[in-house]
Length: 411
View 1 (tube, rainbow, N blue to C red):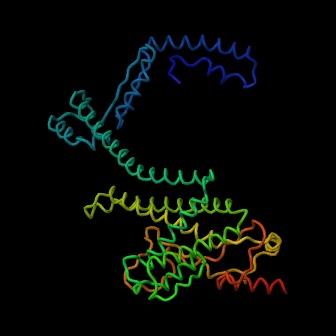
View 2 (view 1 turned 180 degrees about the vertical axis):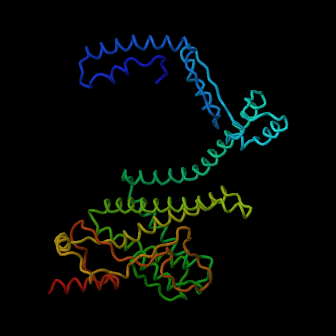
View 3 (view 1 turned 135 degrees about the vertical axis):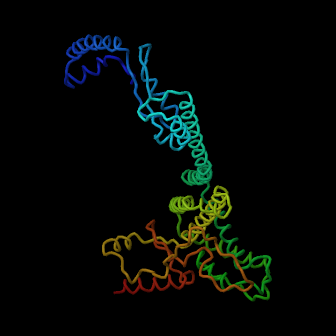
């Protein structure tokens, strides 16, 4: 709203009459206040119009100009006046001491007003410095935000693709291939001889992340190509079996797992990057550019998050089980049986910026997980009939759980 000398007749009328008053009553009230406002406007104009008094100059010249512009609106008379002190914050920060020394040298009394171009130039120079400093701050923050904006674009594009259901099967197969390649590169890298491969760790990782047991045969007969073929065939066979068990709910399960995992890992990533931003400026003490260090660490964290999403989706998808609806209703009615809970599947959390482990020695000790977590227990969801009870396809934890459930049914 603009400043109107004498007052706003319509606003005054609406404030006086009731909210449910008729249009005729409101119109009469407006006419009454128009006459009153016009008389008061003439009195203000005769006195010289609106006078703006400022007790100090602001850090931004734009704000000062806006205050000056409040007077003299729409051709009305008016003036603005600022009263300053050499002890104002703006003057103390920028060149205030130099001016104060000059005034002390000239023996100017404290209560004597000073009107000099030198003071105005000093204030304008201080305002320019403050504006430049604020601009640098905004520019610096924008450079940090650009890093997260690029990552945000990639994650949101991936999430929109999943929501649209665009070729989910192909996405899952790509994730399956990437996780399989990582397991092989970790425990049986191509640049190592078969004697140096960690086959025990490889078997543990395959059982943990894909729920499969692969007969690798004799070490002496293994080659890189043969090992890759054995693992790939075993993983594909397990995935095809899982597809049959989860049909016809496979697409919904894939979409749900992808969305949940992306959302959870992305929120954790944002928290970690915020902590990184708070402490990265300390790297300047080591003669390092904080912005460059932030970009490096944020990129590493994003790569780790990206891999964690892929590995977690594959682990859950390969271990998820369908629950008989009747059994699910019984569990909801009686509550979970603590004896049926698999505490061996508690997943350990991984340090946010910890990279997935790489082999550091020719014969590495067996690793619990190349992805920073212990083997999670089979995930159970209510989507249809029970999963096949072929004991040869179950691992030890699943067999124990099946035995406990059978005993409970017999009782």
